[in-house]
Amino acid sequence: MSLADAFTAVFVSLGAFFFFAGWVGLVRFPDALSRLHALSKADNLGLGLVVIGLLPQASWPFGTLKLIALWLVAVLVGGASAQLLAGAIHAQAAETSTGGEPGRGTEAAPGANGNDKATS
Amino acid sequence: MPDVSLPDPHWADLPLGFALLVLALWLTWTQRDRAAVIGFTGYGLLVAIAWVRLGSMDVALTEAALGGGLMGLLLLTAAARLGEETDQPAPGLPARLSIALLCLGVTLVLAAVVLGLPSPAPNLVAPVASHQAVTELGNPVAAVLIAFRAVDTMLESVVLALAVIVLWSFGADRAWGARPRALHLGPPSPALVFLGRLLPPAGLIVGVHLFWTGADHPGGPFQGGAVLAAMAALLWLARLGEPPRVSDGLTRLGIVVGPLLFLLIGLAGAVIADAFLDYPEALTKPLILLIEAAKTLSVAVALALLVAGPPELPGPMPPRQSGRAAKGVTP
Image (cartoon, rainbow over all chains, first blue to last red; front, side, top):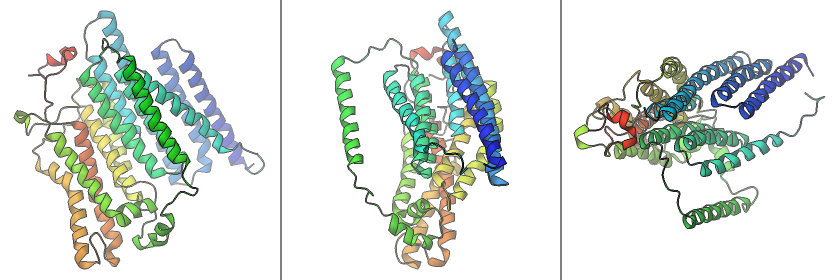
C-alpha cells in the first residue's frame, strides 16, 4: 500500500466516522432541529474528509478541482437547505401552537426542495 | 491496493436496495403530502445511485435531474397549493385492498419479465458499437439518441414544446400574456435568496458542461437543459427574477428552436444526404453539435416554463390558504 493509498484510507475512514456520527444523531436526537444540526455536521465534515482523502486518487488538475468544487457546492447547498428546513419547522411549530398564520410553512418547504433539485 | 483484500463492492448494493424498498413503502404509507413529496425527491436520488451501480450514468443523471429534482419541485408547489388536508377520510378497506393487489400484480409481472430475460438480454449493443465511429461521438448513448434513433429524439423534443402549449392553455383567458406565478409562494427566506445568488453561476457552467461533455461522456442536452431549468426555477423561487410573459416572442422562439432546427436539418438530410434525418458525412459532427446546442436551450426553456406553470391558475385557492388569498392572488 503506497503512501497515497494509506492517506486515502485514513481520511475516508475519518469521513465515514462523521457520517456514522451524523446518522446516530439523526436517529437519536429528540427534535427536528437537533437532527438537522447532526445531519449538516455530517455532510460538511464527513464529505470534506472523504474529499480530502480522495484527492491523491483524482487526476490532476481537473479531477482534483472537481472534487473540491463538489464539496463547496455541497456545503453551500447543505447549509442553505438546512436553514430553509429549520425555517419551515419553526413556522410549522408557530402555526400549530397558535393555530393561526397558515402559509409560512408551505412557503419555506418549496424553497428547501429547490435546493435538493439544484444539487441534483 | 494489492496487499489489502477489500470486500466485494456488490455488498454495497444491499443497503441501497433495502433503503429503496423501505423508502418506497414509507412513501405509500405516509399521509402527509409535503413529507411524501420530499421523500419522493430523496427516492429519486437513491434511484439515481442505483442506476450508477448498474453502470447507466446517462439514466442516472436524467433520473437525478428530472425524477429527483424538477419533478419534486413540481409536486411540492402542487402540495403547497392544495394545502395540507388533515381531516380527509382515508379510503375504505376494499379500495385499499384492491390498490394493493393491483400494485402487487404489476410488481410481480415486472419482476417475472425482468428475471425471465435471457442472459445476455437481446440488445443492439454490437451494431451500435460497430457503427459508432461514423458519428464521431464517444458516448454510445449520444450516438443512438442523435443519429441512429434520431427520429425518436426529434419527436421527444416536439412533445416537450407541446407540453408547454398544453400547460399554458390551462391559464385563464384574462391572464393571457401575464407572467406565470406558480412559484410565487410568498416572500422568500434569506437563505434561499443567498443560494439563488451564489448557485446559478456554477449551475450555468455545470449545465453547459453536461451538454458539451455528452458527446463523449455521460450527459447530453436533456440533462444539461434540466440543470439550466433548475437554476432558472431557483432564481424565480428566490424572486431574483420573474418568469417571462407567456406572450414573449423570444421565449417562444427558445421553446421551438431545438425541434425546429432538428427538423430542418433532418429535412435537408433528405436532399443532401441519403435520407430524412441523415447527416452528410463531412458535416456529421458539427451538425450534431448544432442540433444538441439548440436542443439544450429548448429543453431548458421548456422545463423551466413547465415548472413556472400557466399564466394564471384557474379556480380559487383552497380556503386553507387564506393568508395568501388576502394578498389578492385569488380574485
